[in-house]
Length: 314
Image (tube, rainbow, N blue to C red; front, side, top):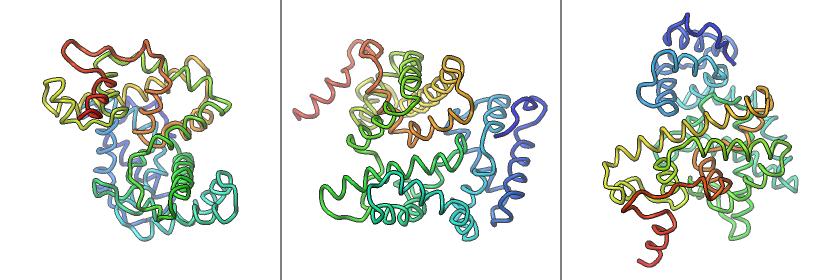
């Protein structure tokens, strides 16, 4: 990870250039232009910190990223054939090892491992290759481990129903997948620390933020539906969701460090278990947080459960 001590002495542009140079030194020329890497990095900053985080905040964020891995993932996201070859060369053994660890048979592990690269290459509902969702906050190995675990859950779910290609799966995790990931959290050696950090982070959110997240991820309402219910513009809901996600994740990491004394390797292991996707993270939050910490809806607004009941009755 980057050195955060000298961030104030470097501009965001110089940090970006340094990250690009460091990534190319490790992985070689993968056909990724500096301009494209810069745009990719800025999109991550906006997604995680909001549209105008400030130079110092953005600089500290970039300095803490796994820039070698981010350079490789960004090149893959820009459809670089050498980048995909490099990704396979570096991580195929890791993918195979994790697949065997989470599967009960060699055949299942082989099927899972051989599907991972295709899953990352195929585009999501927004038209981007799925590997572009990697943001460098954890190592690429840790992020891949979380993806593989999630795919293993989906694979088993499919076999319980009917044999279907993994690519027919919806992008948003189903409740069974969320429950299985939660089981991993609570059974891990860091389960108590993670649970405490989730609850503490939830209490850092405002009542309105918790309500919007509950409606968006627990009740799976669209932003326009939530905006209509709360009588605000849909753009305000979008901003609230993004800001609340950033606040929640940063609060979790702060709690893991300050309260539980976890160092970088331990936190990376935790991240691999709880940050597979934003939807899974928020869904897990809503299931582990104490009922008293959930939002009380503002006057005139329905609660998440009331909204769910109303839709069921419709």
